Structures are given as structure tokens and as C-alpha cells.
Image (tube, rainbow, N blue to C red; front, top):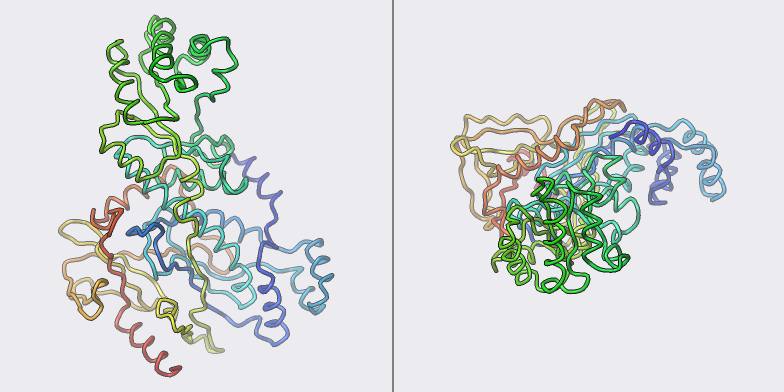
Length: 488
């Protein structure tokens, strides 16, 4: 990411008041009741994987870090809040020097994540911890949603490159740019969004629109001109008029007359409409017959993981995909249901007092206390088989057998031996100071691919995926049951 652009964006985007108003009214209330310095623990977690999938992918942490580092109220913010006539003068004075002074732990971007487990934990004074809720959720929810959808699409392509083409269908500029960022972390080969490349390093690329072809007196002249200008990046859009009768023949002619004499054999055509299986198979035969065996066929047009999978099952001769609206909006399920819930507070002696939210809907009952998450890997295969949520003070003994509830039949328990445990959440802030060095976006992308490879194929199925084990340690389970009994 270019540093001047990064600093420019930081300076010109003050998101301090991008919060729910009740975070400010509660903050004012905490301040007036003397609870403003009460240390609290909040967890971010989600309840359901989008599209009924077996796992999600965490993304958006770097934007959370940027927000926390520059979080402050300027004079305009204070004047606006004063005009609401509901905040005491002392609270507004306090906001003038407001900074985040707490601790944050989070899973690295690109980590596969599962329902119910903390993906980010905040320990901070009550006002600070409460105030950052909205931005944390909107950022992690959005990018985790797009990363999760992207990875489904990328896996459906079975190793063929997928490019993100969705800017013009995204819900606003930030959604386009950050969606492109998340899509690259989760496996896209690149994006059509130029600014996402300049700012975040998601490689930008593109071909031509139908208007390019229409601007010329005929299709062949349009193709020939493009090949002359971009001989090493010639991808020709062949469906402006008629794919098989004119588009592919004119592309072949342009490649033969302009590229082959220069010794250039790498080129491509793009199909953006029609029966993609039929057209790609016919086009492949025509290209091969003309000696253009290295010419790739790229397909676009309202694709998603299911359409891509079906195209390949039908024998489509497609080498790469461009996916737009159904990726950048996660059209099939456009909400990632991450929530931010109080898990504990500290008393004056620094003891952690667990807190629980109870609901008539069992899925909405929270897991209390200050926690950490272990991911467990089979020593024999290296594959991840379970996540264990523990008290933060607990240490897991890998030499002892471990009993977990079966996620598909919670009345059963299963014993595991021969495993290695790794903590998922890493320190991000301590005492308000950043202690985490973010990897490059390329490193995040490689990390994501590597972590997904550690999941069993049954967890990665699109339909009826295996329910991955996520369980509580016995100590945490007992604490939760005691809280439920005491408040029942």
C-alpha cells in the first residue's frame, strides 16, 4: 500500500461519529454515574455461517486498527454533540481528550472462523469499550462476509483464477474498495477496482467494454486496434454482436495478424452472455483449430459458486472467471451476523466477574468471562478438527485426552488424543498502544489459503457441511451453568 495514499485516507476520513447514538448516551450515563472507568470485556462473534457453509473467513482487522489509532473527537464533533442538548458539559469536556486506552485481541485476517467463538475481544474502560462497537461490527461484518463469499466462489473454480468485477454494483465506494481488499485476501486473483490496487495492493486488471467494440466501424478493427495497443494483455470481448459467427472469428484474425507475427501466443477472449458452456466449448474448438491453443477463455455474467460449479460439471472450457455483483454484495446472503456482547467486568481488586446474556432463544445465550480460543490439530494428519473456548487463564494440556461434545448430537461426548493446540487470538493493542504488525495483503492471502487447506473437505462442502467441533472447556461450561441457574 502506498504510504502517501494511506496517510491521505487516514487524514480525510474521520469516522469517530460513525457510531450508534446510544453509545454516546450510554457513555454520558456511565460518566455521570461514575462507571466510566469500570473495566469491561466485550466479545465479537457470529452465530451462523452465510449460505449454510461450514466456516467463515475473518477479514477487516487492519481497518479496525486504523480506526482505533486515530480515534478522537474534534471541535466540530463536540459542537455537534453540544447541540443535541442531552450531554452534560463535563462529559463533553472529557471527550476532548478521548483516546482508546484498552487492550484488544483478535484472530488474524484470513483465519477460518466458526459460530459462537470470539474473533475479537476488547478489554477497556466502559465508555471506550462501548463506544467502538458500531465501527468494529460494520468493518468485521462487511469484510468477513465478502471474504467468506469469495472463498466459496474461488473454491468452486477449482484452481482457475477468479477476478472481482463488482465495483459498480457495490453499496458505495467503501464497499467497493474494501470488498475488493477482502476478496483478494480470500483468494481472488485480482480486481477491476483500480483504487483498491493503489491503496491496498489487490492487483487491478481489465479488458474492454462492449462500448469499445461499438466505437469502431466494425468488430475486427476494434479487436485489431486493441491488440496493437496492448499486445501482451489482449483479452477481447467477443459477444457484442454474435459470439460464434463474428466475435471469435474476428478475434482469431486479430490474434493471427497482430500477435503471432510478434511471437506472442498468450491472449484471451471473454464471454459475457449466452450459454457459457456451449459457447466456451465451441470457441475452444475454433481457437485450437486456428493454432491458438494458448488462448484462454474468460467468462463473466452474474456468476456465483453454484453457477461456476455447474459450468465445470457440464464440461465448459473456461480458464478464468470474472465475478461481480454476486460476490461484492454477497447477494445470496448479504448480512454477516456478527455481534458485540459484554462478557465480563473487573471489580476494584482486578478480579474478573463473568456476565451472561440470557434469552428464550438458546442461540442468543452468550458465553461469559474473559476467554481465549484454541484450535486443535490432529498430529497424524495436521488437519484442524475442533476449536475449544477456554478461560483466558486456562492452559490446555496436549498430553491428556480431551472430551468434546458432538456438535451434531450434543448429548454425546467424544474423546480426542494426539493433538496439538494453537491459540487463535493474538494481541493487537495493549494499553491503547498497537503491538501487532499487520502482514502484507499478499501474506494474508497466502495465510488464508494455507489455513483453509488445514480443514477437512467435509467442512468445506457447499451443501450439508460437517459441523465442526466448537466447544467450551469444562471450567467455562461450569461457570456458564452456574450463571444460568442463578438467573433462571
